[in-house]
Image (cartoon, rainbow, N blue to C red; front, side, top):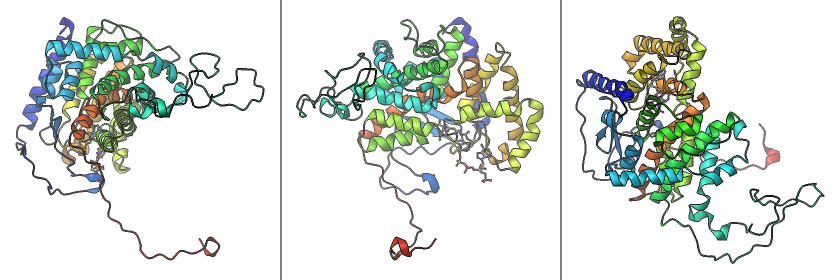
Length: 467
Ligand code: SDX
């Protein structure tokens, strides 16, 4: 660890001690080891309480406020590990040796070079798109060479299509005398039974997971730069994953503190049990679709303001409130309108979210050198205090991972619309790890719903129907 980042380790160790102190009195969890299927569980709407399978990837204990990745406590991983190590741990189930980590890092670095994908991406109006929609599209563009769904057989033969520049994608247009080149498709060349060149052995190859973990960071950084009318940056040969992500995003080599904070933030967001986006990724994978489609569905689910989209909503709320003196009145109004306050509450945590325990003090550390963002942090601290005092403590509604993360990212010069994509940059590690694990013993997800509709309705022709 760099000399200047000692404060960060101190913050994490202090948060650990506080977490242990505050939740020690909670009952120890019953950890079930051997499960005899079929099992009974009490179900609520939205699959609340449903158990979808067994996992070694990660564990969340809502009453103790524990978060564990492959047996390692999140506080230890944040204090001593790196996002590269944690991604390897989640994917492979064990910590890497230095040799294994070196190979993994060089693969991630190799896969962060996505020039062709970025060139395709820049052919779209990324600056006018929802950043998560652009990110999802980017993962689709990434998959072209990596999955058996895009075999030669299925792809139009564009080798000899007439095109004005080698970047364009051949298309068919009526010859109506446009001044620019008219594209025409030659009849399908090559036999349709051509050998599949790049097929994966199955829908979940490890290389594709590495490709996605690296590629989502590159595409997120590129989307941010294109939206601010700048060209994407090539990854820097000497930086860590977190450092490179910030470099590709801002164009500047981050300070050791900025790099370490981003590294810790990526560790914190990497995996979190059977959350909505992880479940979405697994549902898609369970049909044996490929890992790119799974990650794309994870991105789609994460986008929602009830889930990963909350981090952007929080910062917008804090700016709306304006200053800490207005917090009390704002909360009173929110409660009277039964408003769900972004950044608070959680389906599982009924204790303080361990991730917020670290992101809060990191935000406080960073605003010391970001005076323009300090007032927003003060509003956040006041809002936390007021929510806990008015109903949070009683209803066990605490700040969650999204409450302080936006302030941290703002101090790292990340624009608000890129906060949720950063969540995806990290969570790809969790999504791909859980998909890999589930596919080892796959069963297509097919839950049921209770039909409360009518039966035996008589069909009538349209002209006999009245509204
Ligand atoms: C993430 O699942 C994961 O692990 C997700 C995640 C991950 O790492 O993948 O942790 C990341 O998505 C964090 C959550 C980010 N979302 C938000 O911050 C949005 C605001 N939060 C709420 O919408 C809500 O807390 C949820 C969606 C997070 C959880 O919703 P639940 O479990 O369905 O809870 P609920 O809506 O049934 O609420 C239960 C009670 C209600 O009160 P009553 O009607 O019983 O009186 O708690 C209240 C709710 O009104 N409540 C809130 C509240 N969250 C719950 N009241 C005010 N503000 C809130 N934020």
